[in-house]
Image (cartoon, rainbow, N blue to C red; front, top):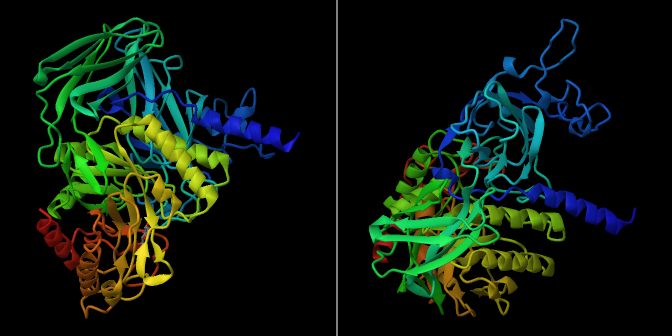
Length: 607
Ligand code: GCB
């Protein structure tokens, strides 16, 4: 076989992984039966339940043997040989990463199988049922009643499979193989500064819909005319064509009817001049009700415009300075990946108490509670995909993986007013391959979502070889709407006194945002302001950095690194780090460090 043919075949195989069913919009508010709770599990580092001893996948066999874990086989006869039994195994809580639930799995990176059984009665015979995952890290193979439903790649975005045909009233079983091994070609790649939490980390549910249901919609303001609401609705099912769809916004006195076209879609727009616009000061959300003969769904949607003009960011036509903080998706008090209403509330309340009107959700799409809560609390959001550091730019599958992740997070969050920025990448080394990769990704993103801004956390360079003058000399700066960059002067780059000597020369007429700066400090460790790891060092670095960046004329926002200390395998210094990145303004126990108050004062002064 020629090399090209092999490449084509491998791309086709990989594409099929991403050819998921179109994700249903607003699964969050659909009637559902939760499959959260305790699931039995088997740790399988050799993937013994997946491959036979010739290393051929059981799932490719015509009649998979009992040894294939997804068959969930039981001994029927006393002479039967079956070397596993899910029902006798220990259990893990879902949603939840395995690392923080079982000490022996703290460092585990590999395959683990989950199993859950359930009975299910549909409320109507013709209804359809979907198995919906909020997210699972990293590669997930899903089997239902002994049949493979499909595979999903990417640890932070939702996916779904229809199970209507396989579902029975009694004794259904779902078996899920989750593999969180890091791979070079992955997104993220091998190297990250955060914990590689594995498992079914987000909610799982069964969603029952009418035979023809409202599958997808987006509703927003026309970004050039804030009196016009526009959108698109698509149906799925045998009656999708030429069907009537009603859009209601009771508070605005709106009730409009539209007809779907031959593809089951309708595009619409209408004028309304009574809208109260969504903003951090007034996070107004409207109940929006969509209905057809068979289906009805409600969402809470805010209406706003966002654009840039020269160096300004305009929200609803008015200048805004983004007073932000970066956040990892980690449970502040109990440890592990966060995924609950309460976790989101805790993290965003801290951000609010810091005076923030904006958060950077680093370095991957966070769970949906975060953006729903941000909508309610009036916090603007930067969302990001894990195109982090040294991605395999030359690899077509890596690109498709990244594109799929941004596509899935847009599908999930396109109706959230709080989300204003899609970030393409973080601190990626410049090269032609990388710039082509990111430019293609930005083009895809703009095409898919014309109502938000594009950015990336870039790096800074010396201007004309002068170490005291810094600039952004990255070709991707030409592509972004907001010029964001990380800088660590005073931490990785000299001592704090260096902040006084640096000047900035920004050559693009775009808003500038400092997407990261910071210093590590152990809560309760006190000393001089030049003693590394003390709260005083971190406090002083914040004071000097804020003075330094205020000299940048186009500065329109900042999201220092980071709200809370978080787990990272790269941070091993005993007694100080102990597996935590200590750049949090709050410790992992919820204690506020001195620098928290420096930033709070700064944000107060920006009012
Ligand atoms: C960075 C990265 C972030 C790290 C941080 C650090 O530039 O973007 O992921 O955690 O620095 O603490 O070094």
